[in-house]
Image (tube, rainbow, N blue to C red):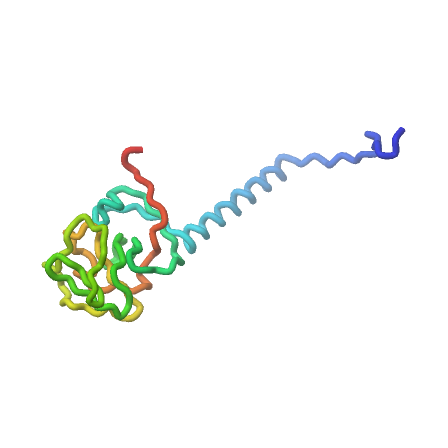
Length: 177
């Protein structure tokens, strides 16, 4: 017999696990998986369903949106925020201390025209704030992509950064699937 060959009699077999031990291991793995998913969905990402057309055509009614909660927010980012107890979707157009003016269907920030991919004209008509508007510290100025709907910063002013739930990183269409 070769030195490198091990005989079957010298090998020790692992003891068989009982059904109770296998079930316990299974439930521990499931519990850990659920805990990790809950932590991710609570503290890292947010999952939201859009129930309006405020960001049409980018985000449509019924779309599932995933937002990264810890993203640094910049101008032109699509964000999810909470205002008046309601989750809303919008686009950041100005940062703290920027001066926003809306006149003649044009948006200007700090005196410069804003290049936008907005399909709809932006108007200050019906706004409850006065223009030019200076964005306060720790806040951003948010407009809807569907500019005819003025339920955005034109109505309730700048949005505090604490009320932003995250930057949209993924959109899944519910319709047409």
